[in-house]
Amino acid sequence: MWRQIETDLLAWKERKRRKPLVLSGIRQCGKTYSLRSFGRERFSNCVYFNFEAQPGLASIFSQDFDTGRILRELSGISGMPITEGETLVIFDEVQESPRVLTSLKYFCEEKPDLHIACAGSLLGTSVRREGFSFPVGKVERLSMFPMTFYEFARANRGGEMLEVLADMELEREIPVVYAERMKDILRQYFIVGGMPAAVSAWSGAHDLQEVEAIQENLLRDYESDFSKHASRSDIPKIHMIWNSIPVQIAKENNKFVFSHVKKGIRARELEDALQWLQDAGMIHKNELAAKPEMPLSFCADATYFKVFLPDIGLLRRRANLTAQDIISGNENYNRFKGAFAENYVMTELAAMGFRPYFWRSGNIAEIDFLIEGGGGIVPIEVKAAENVKAKSLALYMRRYRPQCAFKTSLRNVGVTRQGDTELWSLPLYMLWKLKKYLEEKA
Image (cartoon, rainbow, N blue to C red):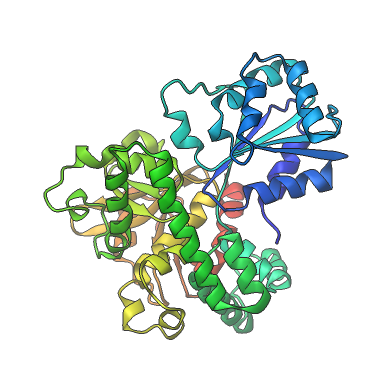
């Protein structure tokens, strides 16, 4: 299955002033597979070391940071030569051995031609541990996410169709035969999500039972990580927050409310547990930007936010929705469909590298997402179906006059001019074209 990260890894490999790479992302999103596949295809040889499965490897780094000695000993263990410019060295699950990450500083300075790539599922939580030294300025970082809709569609016999759509001008209405097929693939994506094991089970035999077994196992594994990697005092709080998220997402006003986690509990009692989930990549936070000015991070309110899950398929399982609920659009799904569309857009934007915020004006208007792109702030209004009346977006455009704005729904492509704003209708299944459009506008 093709992954966008392959393009990013190749760019890293060919960069002249390259540093060791740290690839982070939620557990089982495909980091190890992608790195090993990249090593096989792009290098003369690839050596792989897993610091969770082989804890004894950490002792190689405990003596000192002599890079020559470390490489000789690693070569002896792997039985393969490690040659600068020809070998990819992969350090996996590096959160289990902080000194491995610290060693990257010395590899950066002493072995600049050696390709070293590290992967870890809980790096964010590990960096916060006392005594953990991260080699700031000595590494390059990439983030990996569950498979996006574009990657999912390519894995499900939609590749040729995507190529046609990629070549279409954004102004051109999508032919009905393409639009209906893409809507169908989007429904499948809402059911399966983007965890590679689940996608593989679906793209092969469309085995929903296997997909759901994989999703359940993943959710159990994540909960096991709470107990293994979080502090003892935070474990019950993390479980409470994790269990409350589907209900919080589904609320009409889906602002995260701490008292909805447990009645009477105060925000400061849960903040560390919520931060752990964010550092682990198990949630996305979307903060309020009440005064939309660049940079958005300067005007964000960290106390007023929404929380989303990193995978739409896992959200479906957590919400106890069946595949038939989504296919038929029944009452069970109708309560969640707005939340599903919003969670989907959040994960797509995050995978494109955007850090989204949202805007609200009292109780009269709300814009689901604000991003920085195209030389300014871009508002994005999300609708789950084809009804695209957007009073909040109209108010925002009158008040702030953005250069461009987007309504994303199941409605076909379209563009109009409203005052100073170029207003686009962009189908949910075409959201992957947003980044390229904004890059061309910049």
